[in-house]
Every structure is written in C-alpha cells, then in structure tokens.
Amino acid sequence: MSTSGGRAQACGQLSPVGIAIGVVGCVVITASSVYTALKMGSLPWPTIFTSITALVLLRAFGHRSLNEANITQIVMSAGSMVAGGLAFTIPGIWMLGLADHTSMAEMLFVALAGTLLGLVCTALIRRRFVAESDLEYPIGTAAAETLAATTSRGGTGKKLFLSMGIAGVYSVLRDVLGVVPQMLLALPIPGVTFGIYNSPMMLSVGFLVGFGALAFAMAGAVFANFGLVVGGTAAGLWDVATAGGIVKSLGMGLMMGSGLGVVLKDILPALVRMAQGRDDVHAGSGEGSGTASEGKDSAAAASGERGGLFADLTGRYDAGVLALMVAAAAFVICLGLGLSPLVAVVIILLSFVTTIMSAQSVGQTGIDPMEIFGLIVLLIVAVISQTPPVKLFFVAGIVAVTCGLAGDVMSDFKTGAIIGTNPRAMWVGQAIGALLGVVVAAVTMSALFTAYGPDAFGVGKAFVAAQASVVATMVSGIPSVPAFVIGLAAGIGMYLVGLPSMMFGLGVYLPFYMPFSMFVGSVAKLVFDHFARKAGADEQAEQETGIVRASGLLGGESIVGVIIALVNGATGLAG
Image (tube, rainbow, N blue to C red; front, side, top):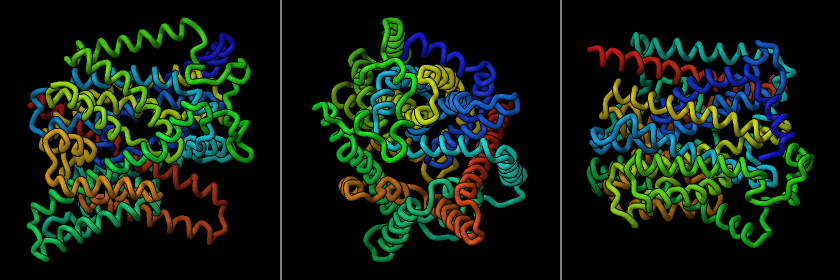
C-alpha cells in the first residue's frame, strides 16, 4: 500500500482512542444497518453520519484531527456494508421456506468470505479508482466538506444525539407501548397498501435521498398500484393476485435492468479505455476546478509510486498478506459453506470484476447495486454447476458483501484523499470494522429471525427485504416472465437516457406505503430548504443541520428496533 514512511504516518493517524470509539460505533452502526436494510429495502451509506459522530466523540477526548476522524468513521461504518450484503440476499432463503437448511454459522462464513475478498479488492483497486481518478464520489466529497465545516460550527453533536433520542422514544411509544399508530391515512384498497408509515426512519430516508429521485419512485408506485393493480382489475384484465405477480416481476426487471444499464453505460466503456491505456480514471485527467490536487493521495505522491492497477502493492509483505486472505476466503467458501472448488474460483475471479463495477458506479452516482452483482454471479454459477438453491444464496451473499465493502468504501477513501489521510491507515481501519461487522451482522440477522420468525420477511411483511425477495424470486421462478422482460428492457433504456430506473423500479416493487412515506420525507426537505432560503440562512449550514438531524432520526429508530428484536428474541428463547 505505501512505504515504511507511510506506515509510520498510518500509526500516527490510527490512534487507540479512535479505534476504541470506532469499534463501539461499529457494533451499533452494523446492527442498525441490518435492521434498516431489512425494514426499508434500502441502506443509505452512513459516511456523513459516522463522520460527524466520530468527530464529536473524538473531541470529547481532546482529539481534533480530521484524519483521525476519517479513520474512526471508517471503522464505524465498514460493517454497514457487510450488513447490507447479508440483508440483501440471505433472507430470501427464509422466504422460500428453507430456513432449516441454513444456520448462523453459515451466515458468518458468507460474511467472512465476502469481507476477506472485499479487503483484498480494496487494496488492489484503491489507487486506480481514487488517487488516479476523476470520479466524483459525491458522498465522499460531501463527507469531507461536512468534516471541514463542523470544525467551525458548534452544537453538531447535540443536534445529532437529540434527534437520535427523539426517534428512539417515538419508536418505543409506537412499537412497545402502542401509544401511537404504525400507519397513518390507511385506506382499504384491494391489492394496495395505502398509507403513510409512521416512522422517523422512513421519513428521514426520504429527506436524505431528496425529492428528485423519490419523485420517480413515487411515479413507479402510482403506476404499479393504481395503474396496473387498481386500473387493470377494474378493466377486467386480471384479478388482484395476478396483478400482484405482474407488478412484482415488472419491478424486479426494472431493478435488474438498472444494474445492467450501469454496466453497459458506465462500466464497460471505462474498462475498455483502461485496457487500451487511455482511461478517464487517470491522474492526468484532473478533477475539475480547484480539486485536482486535493484528489491525489498525499502519501502516494510522496513515495513517487507509478500508476497502475496494482500500484498499492509495494512489497512482498503486502502481497503475501493479500494472497493469504484470498486463500482463507477460498477455504471458507469450500469447507465452511460446502461449495465446490470450481464455484470458489468463479466467485473469487468475478468478485474482482464486480468490485471494479461497484467502484465505478459509486464514483459516478453514489449508488452501489451490490445485490444485482451478486445476482449476476449467482446466475452464472447456476448455469455452470449443479449448486443447490440454498447455496446459490450464499454465492450472491458473498459477492454482495464484497462489492458493498470494496465499492462503497471508495467514498471513504475519497474523503481521505481530499483531507490527506494515509491510505494504509484507512485500509487497516476498514479491516477492523469489517471483520467485527462480520460477527455483529450475523448475530443481528439471527436475532431478528429468532424474534420474528421466517414469516416476517418479504414484501408486504414486517421486514420487506426487497432485494432478498428479488433474489428469492429469481431462484424459485418469476411470476410473470413477460412483465420481467419488459421491465428489464425498460430499466436498461431508462438508465441509458439518464433516468433513475432503479428508483422507479423500487417504487413499482415495494408496497405503496413505503415509497409514499419516503416521498413525504423528500417533500419535507423541499419545505425545509424553502424556508431556510427565505430566512436568508447560510445554505450550507442549513443543509448540514438537516443532514445531521435526519441521520439522527434514522439511527435512533433503527438502534431501538434492534434492541427490541434482541429483547423479543431473548424472551422467546427463555419461553
């Protein structure tokens, strides 16, 4: 990764206090991410939230280094994508009634194999896709700006933790005491779950995602529910049950098509340019006005390393460690999960390819369709081998964890590149958080399953687990192949012309109340911004305040949700 001088710098930025804070935060963030991913069918990357939290907590110990905060937040957030990879795939096993064919140990092995491969791929692609790249990484850039801004503004921590407390108390009133209803404005429309979910977390997701993207999600929801379900049944074209299958297949096709659109439009052309030695992700391309020097890694510049895909590997020790990690992943895949050596080789090779795709997608759009990449590899494995259905979910889970960990973390490395954090220290922080996240994610998934049972997972149920439902449907059989094909073509076409087909597909696929509730949150963001401008407030400061408060609400509800699940699970086991 870097030279011995870089190792010394890494030790200085990776402090014991930062590691301790990061480890505690990792447990909380990873557990809440499992809950959020299953409950919401999405997982906002928590970089900004964890950056602010890390800086606030470090200040309590007299530490004010932005680089230390950057590494601490990587430790805190790395487990989040391990959680996402599991939550977006494994619950599909439960939806197919195959819960008896898997265990917490196997979930642990899936997460561990994906994490080891993700760490290796991070080391291999980091320089190419961050230090030598003109990719924007909007989330990483925003996190760097937020870190810099919070050093000059007080009260950030109070706003964050106050919001978390409010959301936590509200969740207890709703889910434990039953004082407030779970659904508002519910209407009895056949085939349509109309209403607003009374959830600070869901409204906050809408606030953070923004109006533009969620307008498309809302359009998809209206088209599917009131066009296909209500309109189609009223016209006598099909019954409600058939309409549900068509909507599910269409939404799944749109999401798959969006993922393929990313590959066709953003990734394949870049890979061709890379192979021809004239790619855009090169130091000479620059990063736009005023940011080119910021986007270059300071440690790399000092060491004078040449460009190239494997430039981070500067010594035999580094290469040996990464080789051992690959071997360990292969060992876990074959012996721990019972997959064949051929399948293990396919997973390892394609993990490297798909993480490159993830990094490219995150760098351009901030979106990582990790479950789509997992699904693609699953289908390839199903064609070339006689892998049982349950083990196909393991394949998808490993690849999803790998892509989430090595793709989304590039945003964190972008933050570090802007503020001058040592890349070796960031990688070590990622390893600490990700390996801890393996255990926390598997335990939390098991706790939720124990507390609520397999029937709680699926579209229209307590945990919608939309991505895992897509994987389950692909394994078990698509309800309407024509609708899926139409959605696939439409998803590709929409993405190619610049429309957010993934959000439109989610709107089609999810129960109506979910995109509707998130859309209400995005409208709240519009109102918030309008009054801030009208009052003549500092626009950047108000944006940061909104992000902090929304992140706190999201985190507060998800943390309390995990605690409630743990209590329910323990009560059930005791009974």
